[in-house]
Image (cartoon, rainbow over all chains, first blue to last red; front, side, top):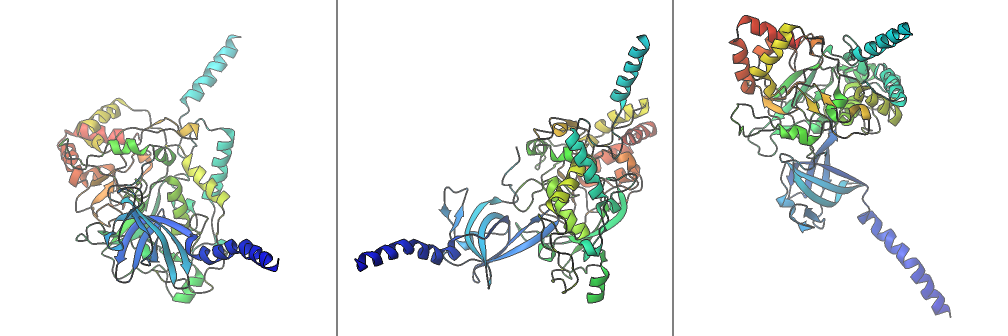
Length: 121
Length: 383
């Protein structure tokens, strides 16, 4: 009987423990769509230009090796390497804040700034 | 009975003849939209102080300080500094808009607190800057209609490779997220709402729900104690009202054209001005009926054109230093200076300064007989 109770308690709390452990890694705090300004493959970083009107800003991101980078044009979830991203690429990044700065969770290349990405109808 | 009919006819004719004057709202607004316009004008005319958020860096203490002559929403005599770094050798990243310094606008004024902290009276330019541009205050008449023009209409005028061999090769600018740009002298900004929201922060130093963070001093954080007002310094409601005022501001109706001006309109088309200054654009679907499916006599294609090296200044987005968006000519009769930096004092001077893609039309204008030149200028004075 005590073993059954213990098992029930463990099973009840296990999902919460798992979520608590995973949430800092998978829950995006913010997202941005903008043009790549610079890529540093060695340092695993990239800079994205974005803004509102003429109020511009640069978002600097660390890109751990495990971050999924995909290309919208090449098909659903077609993988890319960080080195394949170039200045002028328009990307959508989900990221979160860490004591060391912003860290990317996912990166999707959606097009090129000089070609355009989406039009209003 | 007859007198009543005559009175009614006079009233109807007066209503039909009433054309929007500078500063008037668009015709056909609902009572609620008209109320928003009126309240928005009050926000637009507000004067901000450091206690309520002005600065610490700013160009003006309110929208109406610059957009003021002869009415709220019109031109102004203020001239701003914009700067960028152009790297023609860097494919895909030729232009550095100084986004890491807050963008290309460098403010010319500071609050007393920032002056005391840093001993500056304007935002210093970074040493890397390759070009500094002067920018005059444009009017914002009819901007809601320009915002309502579908991208597809603008793109239909693009001819980047000049396939029709007319010497005009308009091309679109794009914002950093790839959307088509249309506002600003280089058509960087995609929507009127973003143009307005960004201007609160960049021009007045007023943070808001769209731009909740204060600007930097050439990329450096503000010293402690120099920005006492809590963020955001204007709320969503104030922002929406200011946007409504600009969005619903009518373009001034063109003046009645004399015979000479009507002839000038034909000359305008004949010499090729209308190749870029497209006389009318049509708006698309829109939640505001007064903006929906309307012809707007904008005299622009909202595209970038090469205007030659003499006018060249900063790059911006995809725009090279010599490329500028075709300036809308609606409300032109109210302007007292012309071109992006105000260097032309008359429309005639502005025409003579056209080069690059505008050279052919300029040369044809200069070769016209004097009466035809006068007719074209008379036409411009009706806009």
